[in-house]
Image (cartoon, rainbow, N blue to C red):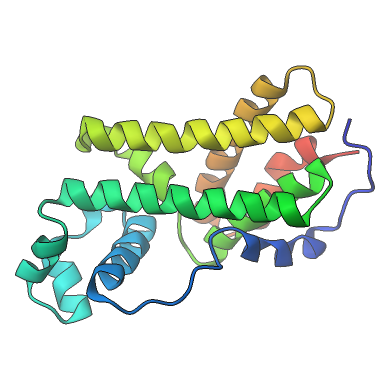
Length: 202
């Protein structure tokens, strides 16, 4: 079971950089569109902005946005696929750099606390909340993201010695997304740690 000494909340903050923070800076138009669309989705929701908003903010014509993403559904799919790729890379980095399963879970908690500090929400969580307004293709990609997330969490609980690792992973993921919602509302990142501490205890 998870038996190493619990880290203080302040000690887990630096691990946040391991998930999705290592990609090289790019300045091409397509990447600018994706970067801005990701930011707006995480702060307003995917239905909270238009191609006109993207064009005006970046300084390009709306037609240029359509050139890269013919319809908004294409943009949604690209965003989900990019976030899943970022997180997959981040999880590999966590596994390579952190030996203890509990500390790996703490790294995930710290990453989600970072969303609150930046006044953002999990992109795929936001998409899931808007499920009725996205296409079946995008819904399938969002489901695949959460399936992959749960599978990774399941592996951590297995390594920690849990027989019900899959159930623990689902409970952790559900608590994480719910805690993020409340923490963002109250602008208090510590809520996430408090909500998940039962999974991180000795």
